[in-house]
Length: 124
Image 1: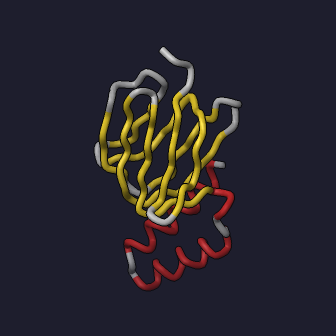
Image 2: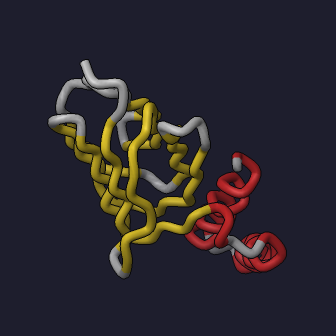
């Protein structure tokens, strides 16, 4: 079993992050999943939520991911997201304003998206 896996996090409009990792945690329609080197092949649907990547050099990358797919085979993990933002790209004040606006507009989708963005920042 290899000690690391190759990860590609791709959004509809760009490549968000690529590199070697020891663990990736993501939320799927079946619940949270952790993928480590040697994991059984999988294909799943991503739910909106933070994705945490433990890099091979001991660092952590956190991204807010909104929908998409996760696939793993041959120690290669692909996260194909509709929308994905690295936590350090997220403007916290803007996300907080978006959350308040979504709550006052009773917009559940926008509220969920803003909440995921803020949870990704908190997890970094």
